[in-house]
Length: 486
Ligand SMILES: [Fe+2]
Image (cartoon, rainbow, N blue to C red; front, side):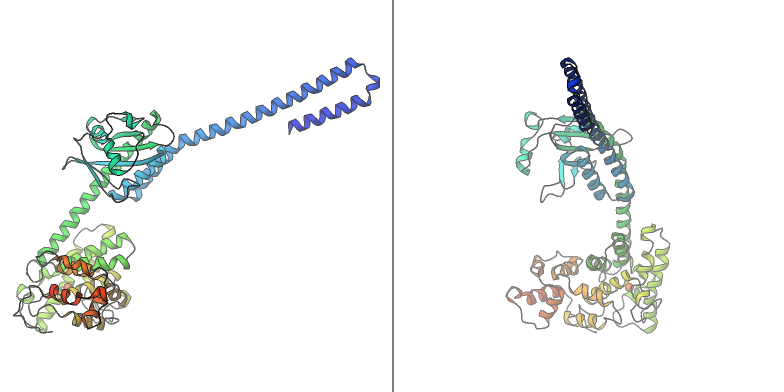
């Protein structure tokens, strides 16, 4: 703009000169023209300076952005602490953010497992088919060395460095160029893992990258330790509740495994019916503990070989309220606070004729409606004191008769859509025998379709023989002397 104005002024000045040239000497005309040229040159210089200044500003802004990128990475990781308590998810977030922060091709967080002396990492990004990689801490890899020495390792050219094992690339099909490994230390200064970044875009990793990664590992170490502690507590709770549930099941060899099978069937249905992960945990623990109240029912009644009297039946029914009372004493976390209520509702029926509260329809927790389907299905397909496993056609008759009045129809439908191999795997999982390999042959047949085949439907080519195989699996090892009372 200044150049344009300058040119205009020069032009005006030149016109004036021409108009009055007859009154001026040649020297004066020359001096004026030189003056115009100087002004023009000055304008051009000014414009060039502005352009350079703008260029410098852009470069500085880019430098500022580059400087802040690691900071925003750190911020995102710290923010993840609030949302990601599970170790797996946390490691995924940390890995992703580090990769972005350092502008590298791949990043892995290796966690040291003290009990095995191994460093493990989740899926190395981009490697298909590998979910967990384990390497010995006393091995020869760069990561192992970093863990042992607790020192940074920055290798600008992997293939020129004797510490790099080219075989790793041969096995994975990846081409490693630059490597940066930073040890992850806990508050006591002990190594708890290693951050590994590979192939920095453009250049090798810099000292600044080392500094940023050191900062990140300091934050991540605390988070990872916290997540590990959380996982340990979760595992302890999980195993404690499972053991409690089994103490009830194991009072009677015939009901052994009932709680775990009901849990597995419920979770299979939950895969399609329940979205929130927290709800899945409530479903798992409620299903596991649903019959815990049976601890308050005399064995003579539970083990009775024949039909129960009305009084005995009333006594058995009490187990649902005992389940609620006992579980309410446990300090479940807020996330699992619904477990006692859900578990105690597994005998409620949609039409309100169930026990022990006589709840109706939507007043029954949805998760309890899932457990109800799993519970009845398992009871019918298991050996009881008074009968053998019920023929599968009869089981289906009962399950379908219960749609709308006993069971949530959506839950029954979800169950019958399950692949038969998964249902069979659960059914056979607690019978003290290995799951037969034949179960795999049912993977493309839904439970509904299998029942149709059992009821006489004409098998398609790939379904031939399934009916006979199922009968053999279902009836294997059944006591012959049981009276089918139902
Ligand atoms: Fe029950």
